[in-house]
Length: 210
Image 1 (tube, rainbow, N blue to C red):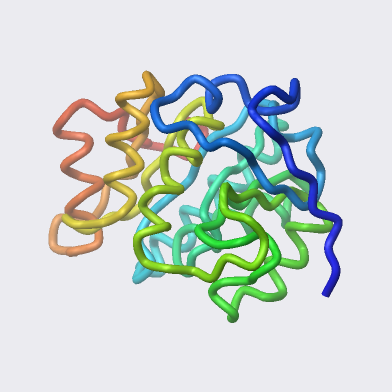
Image 2: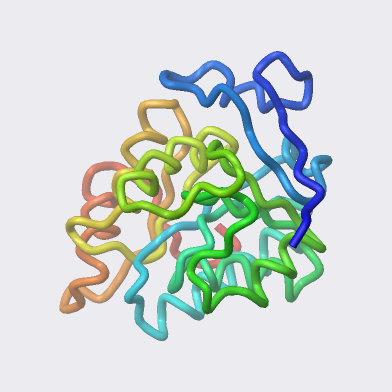
């Protein structure tokens, strides 16, 4: 299907300022959707693919709260926490940006086809990979630097000890971004990473208003 794909090179004034100045900055961004939200106040919401019902509920609540305060929700459109963060923002009439690990013309995972189409219509989908680029495992950790760079803060909802969300948090800290973590059940493997972030100095999200 033909898409209205917009290419932003680094010298384009619409290219995000902080993204332009990070290490290993992408040479270009491929975008589908509303470019106006690319440089608005934004918070990344990330977490485990295999998340709990608690994690799903919190991710949606955060997305809704950000939307009600005119803050863009940024995530990676993976199943689990990412999906629910996007859904929460969209349900409350807010804006959301999905940073993909493949070409913007390819929906992955395929189960998120309806979400992908809704984000294109009401938000923005971006990638550093040219159209037609298939998803490959090594591309997803790389895209995390983009998620944090275009966000003012990164919120980790649930994360296991080896979660890619911890990579995002580490990169965000190097970029000088605020790190927020949702406290989780200490008996749950999916909360080990987010609880460790709090121990290491991340701001605990005690209530959604935080």
